Image (tube, rainbow, N blue to C red; front, side):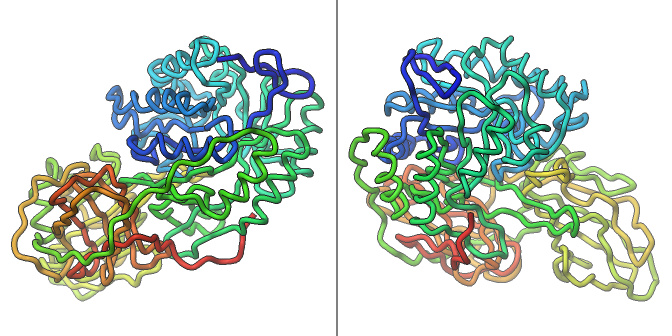
Length: 576
Protein backbone atom coordinates (compact mmCIF):
# COMPACT_ATOMS: atom_id res chain seq x y z
CA UNK A 1 0.00 0.00 0.00
CA UNK A 2 1.03 3.63 -0.47
CA UNK A 3 2.41 5.77 2.35
CA UNK A 4 0.67 8.76 3.94
CA UNK A 5 2.44 12.10 4.27
CA UNK A 6 1.51 15.62 5.36
CA UNK A 7 1.97 18.83 3.38
CA UNK A 8 1.05 22.47 3.97
CA UNK A 9 -2.62 21.94 3.15
CA UNK A 10 -3.53 18.31 3.68
CA UNK A 11 -2.62 14.65 3.32
CA UNK A 12 -0.89 12.92 0.43
CA UNK A 13 -0.93 9.22 -0.26
CA UNK A 14 1.83 8.01 -2.53
CA UNK A 15 2.39 11.65 -3.48
CA UNK A 16 -1.21 12.31 -4.57
CA UNK A 17 -3.74 14.40 -2.60
CA UNK A 18 -5.74 12.18 -0.24
CA UNK A 19 -8.63 12.71 2.15
CA UNK A 20 -8.96 10.35 5.08
CA UNK A 21 -12.59 9.22 5.22
CA UNK A 22 -12.61 6.98 8.28
CA UNK A 23 -15.16 5.28 10.49
CA UNK A 24 -14.63 3.99 14.01
CA UNK A 25 -15.18 0.32 14.79
CA UNK A 26 -13.56 -1.30 17.80
CA UNK A 27 -12.51 -4.89 17.14
CA UNK A 28 -13.03 -5.75 20.82
CA UNK A 29 -16.72 -4.73 20.67
CA UNK A 30 -17.57 -7.03 17.75
CA UNK A 31 -17.37 -10.82 17.59
CA UNK A 32 -14.38 -11.66 15.32
CA UNK A 33 -16.56 -13.82 13.05
CA UNK A 34 -18.59 -10.68 12.27
CA UNK A 35 -15.68 -8.38 11.39
CA UNK A 36 -15.90 -9.08 7.62
CA UNK A 37 -19.56 -8.07 7.38
CA UNK A 38 -19.16 -4.97 9.56
CA UNK A 39 -16.03 -3.82 7.70
CA UNK A 40 -17.72 -4.41 4.35
CA UNK A 41 -20.57 -2.20 5.57
CA UNK A 42 -18.08 0.53 6.49
CA UNK A 43 -16.45 0.38 3.06
CA UNK A 44 -19.87 0.41 1.34
CA UNK A 45 -20.86 3.54 3.29
CA UNK A 46 -18.19 5.39 1.31
CA UNK A 47 -15.30 5.29 3.77
CA UNK A 48 -11.72 4.35 2.90
CA UNK A 49 -10.34 3.82 6.44
CA UNK A 50 -11.34 2.18 9.73
CA UNK A 51 -10.19 3.42 13.15
CA UNK A 52 -9.81 1.41 16.34
CA UNK A 53 -8.60 1.82 19.90
CA UNK A 54 -6.54 -0.85 21.72
CA UNK A 55 -7.72 -1.61 25.32
CA UNK A 56 -4.69 -2.38 27.47
CA UNK A 57 -6.77 -3.93 30.29
CA UNK A 58 -8.34 -6.48 27.93
CA UNK A 59 -4.96 -7.68 26.69
CA UNK A 60 -2.98 -7.65 29.96
CA UNK A 61 -5.46 -8.71 32.67
CA UNK A 62 -2.63 -9.19 35.17
CA UNK A 63 0.98 -8.01 35.03
CA UNK A 64 2.91 -9.88 32.36
CA UNK A 65 -0.02 -12.10 31.32
CA UNK A 66 -1.11 -11.27 27.78
CA UNK A 67 -4.29 -12.41 26.07
CA UNK A 68 -6.04 -12.00 22.71
CA UNK A 69 -3.31 -9.87 21.13
CA UNK A 70 -3.64 -11.73 17.85
CA UNK A 71 -7.10 -10.17 17.50
CA UNK A 72 -5.64 -6.75 16.71
CA UNK A 73 -3.43 -8.17 13.96
CA UNK A 74 -6.29 -10.22 12.53
CA UNK A 75 -8.60 -7.20 12.55
CA UNK A 76 -6.13 -4.99 10.70
CA UNK A 77 -5.52 -7.70 8.14
CA UNK A 78 -9.26 -8.22 7.62
CA UNK A 79 -9.67 -4.46 7.13
CA UNK A 80 -7.04 -4.59 4.40
CA UNK A 81 -8.95 -7.43 2.73
CA UNK A 82 -12.02 -5.20 2.76
CA UNK A 83 -10.05 -2.44 0.98
CA UNK A 84 -9.75 -0.25 4.06
CA UNK A 85 -6.78 1.60 5.48
CA UNK A 86 -6.53 1.77 9.28
CA UNK A 87 -5.87 4.27 12.07
CA UNK A 88 -4.74 2.80 15.40
CA UNK A 89 -5.11 4.57 18.75
CA UNK A 90 -3.07 2.48 21.23
CA UNK A 91 -3.39 4.76 24.26
CA UNK A 92 -2.21 3.72 26.80
CA UNK A 93 -5.43 5.52 27.85
CA UNK A 94 -8.35 5.28 25.42
CA UNK A 95 -11.49 6.48 27.30
CA UNK A 96 -13.95 4.78 24.86
CA UNK A 97 -16.59 4.41 27.61
CA UNK A 98 -14.51 1.33 28.53
CA UNK A 99 -13.72 0.18 32.07
CA UNK A 100 -11.04 2.49 33.56
CA UNK A 101 -10.49 4.05 30.14
CA UNK A 102 -8.62 0.93 29.07
CA UNK A 103 -6.04 1.15 31.86
CA UNK A 104 -5.54 -2.08 33.86
CA UNK A 105 -6.91 -2.10 37.40
CA UNK A 106 -3.57 -3.27 38.78
CA UNK A 107 -1.53 -0.23 37.69
CA UNK A 108 0.54 1.68 40.23
CA UNK A 109 2.04 5.15 40.05
CA UNK A 110 0.42 8.42 38.99
CA UNK A 111 -1.78 7.54 36.03
CA UNK A 112 -1.27 9.39 32.74
CA UNK A 113 1.85 11.26 33.89
CA UNK A 114 5.60 11.03 33.51
CA UNK A 115 5.83 9.36 36.93
CA UNK A 116 8.57 6.70 36.44
CA UNK A 117 6.53 4.04 38.25
CA UNK A 118 3.61 4.45 35.82
CA UNK A 119 5.88 4.74 32.79
CA UNK A 120 7.61 1.49 33.70
CA UNK A 121 4.26 -0.29 33.20
CA UNK A 122 3.59 1.61 29.97
CA UNK A 123 7.03 0.81 28.57
CA UNK A 124 6.57 -2.90 29.23
CA UNK A 125 3.14 -2.91 27.59
CA UNK A 126 4.25 -0.95 24.54
CA UNK A 127 7.24 -3.27 24.13
CA UNK A 128 4.70 -6.06 23.53
CA UNK A 129 2.02 -4.10 21.66
CA UNK A 130 3.71 -1.60 19.36
CA UNK A 131 5.72 -4.07 17.23
CA UNK A 132 2.39 -5.67 16.27
CA UNK A 133 1.16 -2.30 15.00
CA UNK A 134 4.48 -1.44 13.37
CA UNK A 135 4.44 -4.55 11.18
CA UNK A 136 1.00 -3.55 9.85
CA UNK A 137 2.03 -0.03 8.77
CA UNK A 138 1.77 1.00 5.13
CA UNK A 139 5.54 1.48 5.24
CA UNK A 140 5.81 -2.27 5.93
CA UNK A 141 3.26 -3.35 3.32
CA UNK A 142 0.27 -3.18 5.66
CA UNK A 143 -2.65 -0.76 5.91
CA UNK A 144 -2.01 1.37 9.05
CA UNK A 145 -1.89 5.02 7.94
CA UNK A 146 -1.51 6.83 11.27
CA UNK A 147 -1.02 6.17 14.98
CA UNK A 148 -2.30 8.33 17.85
CA UNK A 149 -0.30 9.56 20.85
CA UNK A 150 -2.37 9.05 24.05
CA UNK A 151 -6.02 10.18 23.74
CA UNK A 152 -7.67 13.55 24.39
CA UNK A 153 -4.92 14.29 26.89
CA UNK A 154 -5.85 17.98 26.97
CA UNK A 155 -9.08 16.99 28.76
CA UNK A 156 -6.98 15.52 31.56
CA UNK A 157 -3.57 17.07 32.08
CA UNK A 158 -0.62 19.19 30.96
CA UNK A 159 2.33 16.83 31.46
CA UNK A 160 4.18 17.44 28.21
CA UNK A 161 7.04 15.21 29.37
CA UNK A 162 4.57 12.31 29.38
CA UNK A 163 3.48 12.99 25.80
CA UNK A 164 7.09 13.38 24.68
CA UNK A 165 7.96 10.05 26.32
CA UNK A 166 5.13 8.29 24.47
CA UNK A 167 6.14 9.90 21.18
CA UNK A 168 9.75 8.84 21.60
CA UNK A 169 8.65 5.36 22.60
CA UNK A 170 6.53 4.98 19.46
CA UNK A 171 9.33 6.18 17.20
CA UNK A 172 11.87 3.93 18.91
CA UNK A 173 9.46 1.03 18.34
CA UNK A 174 9.62 1.61 14.57
CA UNK A 175 6.38 3.56 14.14
CA UNK A 176 7.27 5.65 11.09
CA UNK A 177 3.79 6.62 9.82
CA UNK A 178 2.43 10.04 10.90
CA UNK A 179 1.69 10.44 14.61
CA UNK A 180 -1.16 12.65 15.82
CA UNK A 181 -3.00 13.87 18.90
CA UNK A 182 -6.77 14.34 19.28
CA UNK A 183 -8.42 16.90 21.56
CA UNK A 184 -11.54 18.98 21.94
CA UNK A 185 -11.40 22.28 19.98
CA UNK A 186 -10.84 24.40 23.10
CA UNK A 187 -7.72 26.46 23.74
CA UNK A 188 -6.95 24.83 27.10
CA UNK A 189 -7.40 21.32 25.65
CA UNK A 190 -5.26 22.01 22.61
CA UNK A 191 -2.48 23.61 24.63
CA UNK A 192 -2.52 20.74 27.16
CA UNK A 193 -2.80 17.81 24.76
CA UNK A 194 -0.74 18.64 21.67
CA UNK A 195 2.97 18.55 20.88
CA UNK A 196 4.99 20.67 18.45
CA UNK A 197 5.69 18.75 15.27
CA UNK A 198 2.75 16.34 15.66
CA UNK A 199 -0.49 16.58 13.71
CA UNK A 200 -3.22 18.00 15.97
CA UNK A 201 -6.78 16.83 15.29
CA UNK A 202 -10.13 17.66 16.88
CA UNK A 203 -12.97 15.76 18.54
CA UNK A 204 -16.45 17.30 18.31
CA UNK A 205 -20.00 16.67 17.15
CA UNK A 206 -21.34 19.97 15.85
CA UNK A 207 -20.39 23.36 14.38
CA UNK A 208 -17.46 22.00 12.37
CA UNK A 209 -16.58 25.41 10.91
CA UNK A 210 -15.89 26.94 14.33
CA UNK A 211 -14.09 23.83 15.59
CA UNK A 212 -11.77 23.75 12.58
CA UNK A 213 -11.13 27.49 12.85
CA UNK A 214 -9.95 26.94 16.42
CA UNK A 215 -7.66 24.16 15.26
CA UNK A 216 -6.30 26.41 12.51
CA UNK A 217 -5.43 29.13 15.04
CA UNK A 218 -3.26 26.60 16.83
CA UNK A 219 -1.87 25.03 13.64
CA UNK A 220 -1.74 27.60 10.82
CA UNK A 221 -0.66 24.99 8.26
CA UNK A 222 -1.06 21.29 7.65
CA UNK A 223 -4.00 18.89 7.33
CA UNK A 224 -7.26 19.54 9.14
CA UNK A 225 -9.06 16.54 10.57
CA UNK A 226 -11.84 15.66 12.97
CA UNK A 227 -10.67 12.47 14.61
CA UNK A 228 -14.02 11.93 16.34
CA UNK A 229 -17.12 13.30 14.65
CA UNK A 230 -19.74 12.34 17.23
CA UNK A 231 -22.81 11.35 15.24
CA UNK A 232 -24.58 9.67 18.19
CA UNK A 233 -23.88 9.08 21.86
CA UNK A 234 -23.75 6.41 24.56
CA UNK A 235 -26.22 5.69 27.38
CA UNK A 236 -26.05 5.33 31.15
CA UNK A 237 -28.10 2.97 33.28
CA UNK A 238 -31.13 4.79 34.65
CA UNK A 239 -31.02 7.50 31.98
CA UNK A 240 -32.67 8.01 28.60
CA UNK A 241 -31.65 6.39 25.34
CA UNK A 242 -29.86 9.11 23.39
CA UNK A 243 -30.36 9.44 19.65
CA UNK A 244 -29.46 12.01 17.02
CA UNK A 245 -31.58 12.93 14.03
CA UNK A 246 -30.07 11.30 10.90
CA UNK A 247 -30.61 14.42 8.77
CA UNK A 248 -28.86 16.62 11.35
CA UNK A 249 -25.90 14.23 11.65
CA UNK A 250 -25.56 13.95 7.86
CA UNK A 251 -25.70 17.73 7.52
CA UNK A 252 -22.84 18.12 10.02
CA UNK A 253 -20.80 15.53 8.11
CA UNK A 254 -21.46 17.30 4.82
CA UNK A 255 -20.49 20.71 6.23
CA UNK A 256 -17.28 19.25 7.61
CA UNK A 257 -16.32 17.69 4.30
CA UNK A 258 -17.07 20.89 2.41
CA UNK A 259 -14.24 22.56 4.35
CA UNK A 260 -11.81 20.06 2.82
CA UNK A 261 -11.09 18.39 6.18
CA UNK A 262 -10.62 14.69 6.78
CA UNK A 263 -12.91 12.84 9.16
CA UNK A 264 -13.30 9.83 11.41
CA UNK A 265 -17.00 9.09 12.00
CA UNK A 266 -17.40 8.11 15.66
CA UNK A 267 -18.92 5.57 15.62
CA UNK A 268 -19.48 4.03 12.19
CA UNK A 269 -20.39 0.82 14.02
CA UNK A 270 -20.57 0.88 17.82
CA UNK A 271 -20.98 -2.76 18.75
CA UNK A 272 -21.37 -4.08 22.29
CA UNK A 273 -19.63 -3.87 25.68
CA UNK A 274 -19.57 -7.64 26.05
CA UNK A 275 -18.56 -9.09 29.38
CA UNK A 276 -18.14 -6.62 32.24
CA UNK A 277 -16.15 -4.04 30.27
CA UNK A 278 -18.58 -1.10 30.14
CA UNK A 279 -17.18 1.96 31.89
CA UNK A 280 -18.79 4.73 33.94
CA UNK A 281 -18.69 8.43 34.65
CA UNK A 282 -18.58 10.32 37.92
CA UNK A 283 -19.54 13.98 38.23
CA UNK A 284 -16.64 15.93 39.71
CA UNK A 285 -18.90 18.39 41.56
CA UNK A 286 -21.68 16.13 42.84
CA UNK A 287 -19.85 12.81 42.95
CA UNK A 288 -22.80 11.17 41.18
CA UNK A 289 -21.81 7.85 39.63
CA UNK A 290 -23.39 6.78 36.34
CA UNK A 291 -22.40 3.39 34.88
CA UNK A 292 -22.56 2.85 31.12
CA UNK A 293 -24.97 0.32 29.60
CA UNK A 294 -23.94 -2.87 27.82
CA UNK A 295 -24.98 -1.78 24.33
CA UNK A 296 -22.57 0.49 22.49
CA UNK A 297 -24.95 0.90 19.54
CA UNK A 298 -24.17 4.65 19.80
CA UNK A 299 -27.06 5.40 17.40
CA UNK A 300 -24.42 4.68 14.75
CA UNK A 301 -25.10 4.31 10.99
CA UNK A 302 -24.46 0.55 11.29
CA UNK A 303 -26.61 -0.78 14.13
CA UNK A 304 -25.40 -3.04 16.91
CA UNK A 305 -26.57 -6.09 14.94
CA UNK A 306 -24.96 -4.99 11.66
CA UNK A 307 -27.97 -3.55 9.83
CA UNK A 308 -27.95 -0.33 7.82
CA UNK A 309 -30.00 2.43 9.45
CA UNK A 310 -31.52 5.57 7.94
CA UNK A 311 -28.39 7.37 9.11
CA UNK A 312 -26.31 4.89 7.08
CA UNK A 313 -28.07 5.71 3.84
CA UNK A 314 -27.88 9.46 4.47
CA UNK A 315 -24.16 9.21 5.22
CA UNK A 316 -23.60 7.07 2.14
CA UNK A 317 -25.29 9.72 0.01
CA UNK A 318 -22.86 12.33 1.35
CA UNK A 319 -19.69 10.22 1.32
CA UNK A 320 -20.05 8.74 -2.16
CA UNK A 321 -19.70 12.23 -3.59
CA UNK A 322 -16.07 11.99 -2.46
CA UNK A 323 -15.32 8.26 -2.63
CA UNK A 324 -16.63 5.39 -4.76
CA UNK A 325 -18.23 2.59 -2.76
CA UNK A 326 -19.40 -0.96 -3.44
CA UNK A 327 -22.92 -2.12 -2.64
CA UNK A 328 -23.47 -3.13 0.99
CA UNK A 329 -23.56 -6.83 1.88
CA UNK A 330 -26.98 -8.38 2.58
CA UNK A 331 -28.44 -7.81 6.06
CA UNK A 332 -28.13 -10.57 8.66
CA UNK A 333 -30.90 -13.08 9.36
CA UNK A 334 -32.64 -13.34 12.75
CA UNK A 335 -34.10 -16.08 14.91
CA UNK A 336 -37.88 -15.97 15.38
CA UNK A 337 -39.24 -14.67 18.71
CA UNK A 338 -39.53 -17.31 21.42
CA UNK A 339 -40.10 -17.76 25.14
CA UNK A 340 -37.40 -19.71 27.00
CA UNK A 341 -38.32 -21.21 30.40
CA UNK A 342 -35.84 -21.37 33.26
CA UNK A 343 -35.02 -25.00 34.02
CA UNK A 344 -32.63 -24.81 36.94
CA UNK A 345 -31.34 -22.56 39.72
CA UNK A 346 -28.75 -22.29 42.47
CA UNK A 347 -28.78 -19.67 45.21
CA UNK A 348 -26.14 -16.96 45.10
CA UNK A 349 -24.63 -17.91 48.44
CA UNK A 350 -24.35 -21.58 47.40
CA UNK A 351 -22.85 -20.55 44.06
CA UNK A 352 -20.24 -18.41 45.81
CA UNK A 353 -19.03 -21.48 47.69
CA UNK A 354 -18.26 -23.05 44.30
CA UNK A 355 -16.83 -20.03 42.46
CA UNK A 356 -14.99 -18.11 45.20
CA UNK A 357 -11.24 -17.84 45.52
CA UNK A 358 -9.23 -18.15 48.74
CA UNK A 359 -10.63 -16.53 51.88
CA UNK A 360 -8.65 -13.87 53.75
CA UNK A 361 -9.28 -12.07 57.05
CA UNK A 362 -8.01 -8.53 57.55
CA UNK A 363 -8.73 -5.76 60.10
CA UNK A 364 -10.40 -3.64 57.40
CA UNK A 365 -12.24 -4.91 54.31
CA UNK A 366 -9.92 -5.37 51.32
CA UNK A 367 -10.86 -3.91 47.96
CA UNK A 368 -11.28 -5.94 44.78
CA UNK A 369 -7.79 -4.86 43.77
CA UNK A 370 -6.23 -6.00 47.03
CA UNK A 371 -7.86 -9.38 46.50
CA UNK A 372 -6.39 -9.60 43.00
CA UNK A 373 -9.69 -9.35 41.15
CA UNK A 374 -10.65 -6.75 38.56
CA UNK A 375 -14.36 -7.47 38.12
CA UNK A 376 -17.08 -9.74 39.45
CA UNK A 377 -18.16 -10.17 43.08
CA UNK A 378 -16.57 -10.05 46.52
CA UNK A 379 -18.19 -11.76 49.49
CA UNK A 380 -17.49 -10.02 52.83
CA UNK A 381 -18.40 -11.29 56.30
CA UNK A 382 -18.10 -9.50 59.64
CA UNK A 383 -19.48 -9.91 63.15
CA UNK A 384 -21.48 -7.23 64.96
CA UNK A 385 -20.81 -7.56 68.72
CA UNK A 386 -23.67 -7.57 71.17
CA UNK A 387 -25.88 -7.17 72.90
CA UNK A 388 -26.58 -3.76 71.37
CA UNK A 389 -29.59 -1.82 70.14
CA UNK A 390 -30.37 -1.41 66.43
CA UNK A 391 -28.15 1.09 64.60
CA UNK A 392 -27.61 1.87 60.89
CA UNK A 393 -25.12 -0.27 59.02
CA UNK A 394 -22.94 2.10 57.02
CA UNK A 395 -20.52 1.00 54.29
CA UNK A 396 -18.10 3.86 53.75
CA UNK A 397 -16.81 4.17 50.21
CA UNK A 398 -19.00 1.45 48.71
CA UNK A 399 -18.20 0.74 45.07
CA UNK A 400 -20.78 -0.20 43.77
CA UNK A 401 -23.77 -2.24 45.07
CA UNK A 402 -23.98 -4.65 48.00
CA UNK A 403 -26.52 -7.30 48.91
CA UNK A 404 -26.73 -7.42 52.72
CA UNK A 405 -27.49 -10.63 54.60
CA UNK A 406 -28.06 -10.56 58.37
CA UNK A 407 -27.82 -13.93 60.11
CA UNK A 408 -28.27 -15.63 56.76
CA UNK A 409 -31.38 -13.70 55.68
CA UNK A 410 -31.36 -11.13 52.88
CA UNK A 411 -31.98 -7.75 54.51
CA UNK A 412 -31.69 -5.43 51.51
CA UNK A 413 -29.33 -3.68 49.11
CA UNK A 414 -26.89 -0.87 49.83
CA UNK A 415 -25.84 1.61 47.14
CA UNK A 416 -25.73 5.35 46.54
CA UNK A 417 -29.11 6.81 47.40
CA UNK A 418 -30.36 3.73 49.32
CA UNK A 419 -31.53 3.99 52.92
CA UNK A 420 -29.16 2.36 55.42
CA UNK A 421 -30.08 -0.98 56.95
CA UNK A 422 -30.64 -1.01 60.72
CA UNK A 423 -29.68 -4.03 62.77
CA UNK A 424 -29.02 -5.04 66.36
CA UNK A 425 -26.20 -7.13 67.75
CA UNK A 426 -24.92 -9.70 68.04
CA UNK A 427 -25.26 -10.51 64.35
CA UNK A 428 -23.36 -11.97 61.43
CA UNK A 429 -23.37 -9.60 58.47
CA UNK A 430 -22.52 -10.68 54.93
CA UNK A 431 -22.12 -8.21 52.07
CA UNK A 432 -21.93 -9.43 48.47
CA UNK A 433 -20.57 -6.54 46.43
CA UNK A 434 -21.03 -6.61 42.66
CA UNK A 435 -18.81 -4.38 40.55
CA UNK A 436 -20.07 -2.02 37.89
CA UNK A 437 -17.77 -0.23 35.46
CA UNK A 438 -14.80 1.84 36.54
CA UNK A 439 -14.82 5.55 35.69
CA UNK A 440 -13.31 6.00 32.23
CA UNK A 441 -12.98 9.78 31.92
CA UNK A 442 -11.70 12.68 33.99
CA UNK A 443 -9.85 13.06 37.28
CA UNK A 444 -11.85 10.39 39.13
CA UNK A 445 -10.27 7.56 37.16
CA UNK A 446 -8.41 4.84 39.00
CA UNK A 447 -11.09 4.36 41.65
CA UNK A 448 -10.93 1.18 43.71
CA UNK A 449 -13.77 -1.36 43.73
CA UNK A 450 -15.50 -3.05 46.65
CA UNK A 451 -15.49 -1.52 50.14
CA UNK A 452 -12.90 1.24 50.22
CA UNK A 453 -13.25 2.87 53.65
CA UNK A 454 -14.70 0.26 56.00
CA UNK A 455 -17.91 -1.10 57.52
CA UNK A 456 -19.48 0.81 60.40
CA UNK A 457 -22.27 0.09 62.85
CA UNK A 458 -23.47 3.55 63.78
CA UNK A 459 -20.04 5.30 63.90
CA UNK A 460 -18.01 2.30 65.07
CA UNK A 461 -15.81 0.39 62.65
CA UNK A 462 -16.41 -3.35 62.49
CA UNK A 463 -13.03 -5.04 62.31
CA UNK A 464 -11.71 -8.48 61.36
CA UNK A 465 -13.47 -8.75 58.02
CA UNK A 466 -13.37 -12.01 56.07
CA UNK A 467 -13.42 -11.63 52.27
CA UNK A 468 -13.56 -13.97 49.27
CA UNK A 469 -13.10 -12.87 45.65
CA UNK A 470 -15.63 -14.32 43.21
CA UNK A 471 -14.37 -14.00 39.61
CA UNK A 472 -17.04 -14.51 36.96
CA UNK A 473 -14.94 -15.31 33.88
CA UNK A 474 -16.01 -18.97 34.09
CA UNK A 475 -19.24 -20.15 35.71
CA UNK A 476 -19.26 -23.62 34.16
CA UNK A 477 -18.57 -25.36 37.50
CA UNK A 478 -22.05 -24.51 38.83
CA UNK A 479 -24.52 -27.33 39.44
CA UNK A 480 -28.18 -26.43 39.15
CA UNK A 481 -31.10 -27.77 41.12
CA UNK A 482 -34.81 -27.27 40.34
CA UNK A 483 -35.86 -23.86 39.00
CA UNK A 484 -36.56 -21.34 41.76
CA UNK A 485 -37.56 -17.68 41.45
CA UNK A 486 -36.81 -16.51 44.97
CA UNK A 487 -33.86 -14.33 45.85
CA UNK A 488 -30.52 -13.68 44.16
CA UNK A 489 -28.94 -16.59 42.35
CA UNK A 490 -27.82 -18.23 39.12
CA UNK A 491 -30.43 -19.62 36.74
CA UNK A 492 -30.16 -21.92 33.74
CA UNK A 493 -32.21 -22.17 30.55
CA UNK A 494 -31.79 -23.97 27.23
CA UNK A 495 -32.35 -22.41 23.81
CA UNK A 496 -32.71 -24.88 20.95
CA UNK A 497 -32.12 -23.59 17.41
CA UNK A 498 -31.97 -25.29 14.03
CA UNK A 499 -29.28 -22.93 12.72
CA UNK A 500 -27.56 -19.98 14.41
CA UNK A 501 -28.83 -16.50 13.53
CA UNK A 502 -28.92 -13.06 15.13
CA UNK A 503 -31.15 -12.39 18.14
CA UNK A 504 -31.84 -10.14 21.09
CA UNK A 505 -32.48 -11.44 24.59
CA UNK A 506 -35.03 -9.81 26.90
CA UNK A 507 -35.50 -10.57 30.60
CA UNK A 508 -39.07 -9.51 31.49
CA UNK A 509 -39.66 -9.52 35.23
CA UNK A 510 -35.95 -9.77 36.10
CA UNK A 511 -34.03 -7.14 38.07
CA UNK A 512 -30.29 -6.73 37.57
CA UNK A 513 -27.54 -9.12 36.61
CA UNK A 514 -25.38 -10.78 33.96
CA UNK A 515 -26.05 -13.27 31.13
CA UNK A 516 -23.82 -15.96 29.58
CA UNK A 517 -24.65 -17.96 26.44
CA UNK A 518 -22.52 -21.07 25.90
CA UNK A 519 -19.97 -19.54 28.26
CA UNK A 520 -19.80 -16.22 26.35
CA UNK A 521 -20.73 -13.25 28.55
CA UNK A 522 -23.26 -11.02 26.78
CA UNK A 523 -22.97 -8.38 29.53
CA UNK A 524 -25.14 -6.76 32.15
CA UNK A 525 -28.89 -6.16 32.14
CA UNK A 526 -30.83 -3.91 34.51
CA UNK A 527 -34.54 -3.23 34.79
CA UNK A 528 -33.95 0.52 35.35
CA UNK A 529 -33.15 0.75 31.63
CA UNK A 530 -32.95 2.37 29.22
CA UNK A 531 -31.63 -0.81 27.58
CA UNK A 532 -34.15 -3.67 27.73
CA UNK A 533 -32.53 -6.28 25.47
CA UNK A 534 -29.05 -7.78 25.17
CA UNK A 535 -27.58 -8.40 21.72
CA UNK A 536 -26.97 -12.11 21.07
CA UNK A 537 -24.56 -12.48 18.10
CA UNK A 538 -25.08 -15.52 15.90
CA UNK A 539 -21.47 -16.85 16.20
CA UNK A 540 -22.08 -17.46 19.92
CA UNK A 541 -24.84 -19.96 19.10
CA UNK A 542 -24.65 -23.50 17.72
CA UNK A 543 -27.16 -25.76 16.06
CA UNK A 544 -29.10 -27.69 18.70
CA UNK A 545 -29.12 -26.86 22.40
CA UNK A 546 -27.52 -23.69 23.76
CA UNK A 547 -26.98 -23.08 27.48
CA UNK A 548 -28.08 -19.74 28.95
CA UNK A 549 -26.94 -18.83 32.47
CA UNK A 550 -28.29 -15.75 34.26
CA UNK A 551 -26.87 -14.24 37.43
CA UNK A 552 -29.73 -12.33 39.03
CA UNK A 553 -28.90 -9.99 41.93
CA UNK A 554 -32.39 -8.71 42.73
CA UNK A 555 -35.57 -10.58 41.78
CA UNK A 556 -35.54 -13.29 39.12
CA UNK A 557 -38.18 -14.09 36.56
CA UNK A 558 -39.27 -17.48 35.28
CA UNK A 559 -38.69 -17.05 31.52
CA UNK A 560 -36.39 -15.31 29.05
CA UNK A 561 -37.58 -13.91 25.73
CA UNK A 562 -35.90 -14.12 22.34
CA UNK A 563 -36.61 -11.15 20.06
CA UNK A 564 -35.67 -10.11 16.53
CA UNK A 565 -35.47 -6.37 17.23
CA UNK A 566 -33.61 -4.46 19.94
CA UNK A 567 -35.15 -2.38 22.71
CA UNK A 568 -32.57 0.22 23.72
CA UNK A 569 -35.08 2.50 25.44
CA UNK A 570 -37.01 5.66 24.67
CA UNK A 571 -35.08 8.37 22.83
CA UNK A 572 -34.67 11.80 24.37
CA UNK A 573 -34.06 15.03 22.47
CA UNK A 574 -31.27 14.89 19.86
CA UNK A 575 -27.73 15.46 21.03
CA UNK A 576 -24.80 17.07 19.25
